[in-house]
Image (cartoon, rainbow, N blue to C red; front, side, top):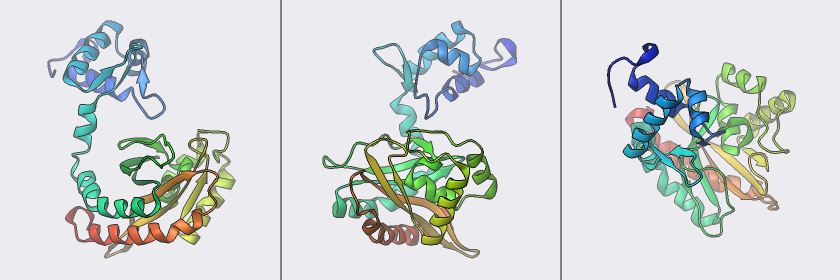
Amino acid sequence: MAGGAAAGGRSVTSRALAVLDAFDAASPRLTLTEIAERSGTPLTTAHRLLAELTAWGALSRRADGRYEIGRKLWDLGLLAPVQLELRQLAAPFLLDVHTATRDTVHLAVREGVHALYVERISGRESVPVVSQVGSRLPLHATGVGKVLLASAPDEVVAQVLAAPERATRHTVVDPVRLSRELAEVRRRGWARTAEEMSLGTASVAVPVRVERACGPVVAAALGIVVPSHRRDLARLVPVLEVAARGVGRALARTAPFR
């Protein structure tokens, strides 16, 4: 689909990328009109690009006429070298946690002000969750996200605290309270949430640290999601910490994470 300059000085490639960039975690499914508006693309051009992107597999058209990201982009994204290596190295440890708990286990890394989910293991007994591999969810509203936010640069923390979005009525959006929570995460070494991302769920998460010459660095976060009525979240922390140390040691021996 690459080509020469299009009207308005934008190439076909840049217009196609703008169409794809219209989608985000808050808007995973969009109509033709919404895509045209969000991407700044004329309606007729957007319609043509959507047809080509759908035919290639980058997008998928639902029965209701809305579009969503296609499987081919998911597959390509998972081939990114660092993510692929991280998933492969961490998979046995995540499986150990799932086998021991039967709950949904997540592995995430920070991408800007979002937690990018790079792996998930769940089963029939696991509570339903909104996250999928490739999902980007707010750092302040998830267990793995709070772990990553607690170790993020000051400017990232400031950006999140400036405008935290409310995912449910339980999401902590007060900057003062959220700052206190992050301080507590740093002190005790793990985070927890209660129905902050989706109702009926709670989560607990720990950091995956990699030893470097400058000291330990948080490379990822490992978490479990359970039904919100569970009261044993703190008892799950040691299980996660054992797995996180295993992932951290494996990553420390790998070139991209040294």
